[in-house]
Amino acid sequence: MLAGELYLASDAELLKERRHAKRLLRQLNISEYLVTKPAKDLIKELIPNAGKNLYIEPPFHCDYGTNIYCGDNVYFNVNCVVLDTMKITIGSNVLFGPAVQIYAATHPLDKETRKTLECSKPITIGNDCWIGGGAIILPGITIGNNCVVGAGSVVTKAIPDNSMAVGNPAKVIKSLA
Image (tube, rainbow, N blue to C red):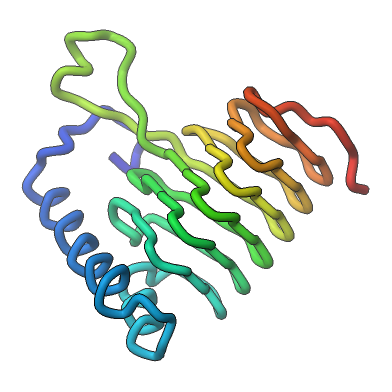
């Protein structure tokens, strides 16, 4: 899966890892709904590859958590979804508005293969970015440093450094340099 090859999502090891993440998410999203010391400990266990000051407003959803790599000072607003079936790299000082969706998971186009196997593509988001509420970032996307993605945008292609992108599909409309 992490090598970008086709994989069986029902593999016993993957099921075990997803169940572990779901147990942690249940605690975070229901029992520890306020971001307290116990919630911060759950977040650290769920997303161990994060820098300082990862802040998540519940509810939050992800597949594994362990495939999310964050720099320092990353903020997820409410209702964010991260399908981390592949490495997702997030720089430092990144803000995610409510209901942002980040999809590393995808499916083969061939209908017979799609019946049993899945695939993934990595996602990279640079430093100092703001991803507006309801934005969707598709598999294999790279967003450069100092970028703004407008609310509701669907990012289908790479966004270069110092850019503002909006729309569906997202298009660069302004330089932020």
